Image (tube, rainbow, N blue to C red):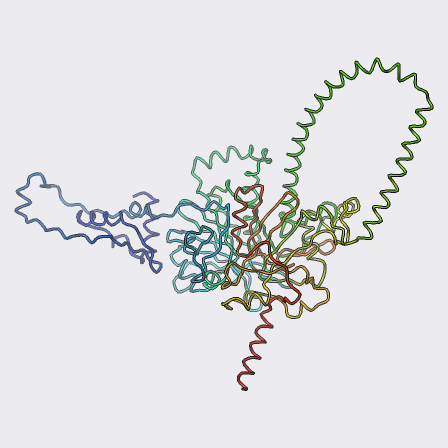
Length: 628
């Protein structure tokens, strides 16, 4: 038996009920044949256990007597009977899942008993991601249920769980723990912010025998999050490296460094860099060792990471003092990199066109020179007075043009905010969120689109650009961030009010004088029975369009806040970004959104839904009815 077969045998035995290998050893060849027939049938998962159901019951065969067996010379067997062992590795080879997720799209979770998902490819469940063949798992979550872990992850040999913790009750570090069914569980409490903040990223790294499954979502490890609330999920499978691939990559490592212009190598390098940096900051750098055995060359998204801390901002280039860009700065870096590539491609095309025009002009100039020699003598005979008159006319025309420009500038100043910049029509940002930040203080909702577009308001270099450009310093012409959040009217229309606790809006914030009421839009899910816990950011910056899904809410704590020369992040977050220029199925991505897009704006009577106000109203109604 090979080593791979033995490992598969042990894993399957753990999932089928903790049997030993000797329990399935057979001594008679006839029983071995009967088991081989069973393996050709289809396996079915019922109640998280493997059951093999036969289509037709086998008819019992009549046993031959010893005399009948001896009379047939062909079927006589003089060899002694040998003990044979059932090879589970070969029998269950067809049951092993294959790498099917390419990471080029995202999915919605399959909400239990809420909508029909037959024939729809953009729905996924936890059972589609986790199977009995998972060897090890790295999980991160804000909250979790022990029942959820025991139900779907108890068969895994090694589990690492990264979770949020409270400073008053728990401590930072790595601990060994267990549940009723999970005996090998390592819990990690990552470092948190000094004042406030939380660990909010939601990832699953599942190791299969032949590939690695990487999952980033907005769902916690609870039954309620996966089966009651609306979530977004991204998943991609990465194949395991062979020995030949590892040797070739070691030889071509130096060559790949020189070829930084290729986007695939850049993606792979940045993806591995962000993951290793994430584990290093958490205090578990050793978890990266196993991931190096897999091939990430076909990564199809960009990772966005948020790490809590205060970071200094360089006053000249606008970069933060850290090995990686976090939150809004990471989106800014992605946008700038694509601007460079697009400008380089446009410059190459313009150079080719200019070379063609130069050749045409050279041929035309040669013919013109021949004709011009004959006309030179005639031009010299013209009077000097005519030349002076032409110069005077040109001066008068220049004065008239200056006066017209001054009049146009005065008209633009009078119009003010009514005059919309042409560039701003090509730029928009929509953020669907389940938690609304503190917008009445500071200029975060104004500065966030500027940072994503590559306009850093804190740098001296950017201030010079603003003076030269048409964009005003107050930000009235530049588009602001538009928030997609459910109103009270939308929630009351829904038939199911379970899960309203996930919607966070501060009580009394809407009545504040500085609150941006004109930037709120309705969050209308395609199914009114579902409350969305998803987080989606859709942006367009001229030709560049991108879409983000992950754990980032529309808040300063998640994306980061820029104040003076410091960039502050409070939460741990992680998500992925799709770029329109890279994805061939961009319309499918927009069709997969769990809400209607483009959204409709709040009416004058609409108010964002607040759970605190709703619970107080419910308590008052209960008291009123009890008095009656």
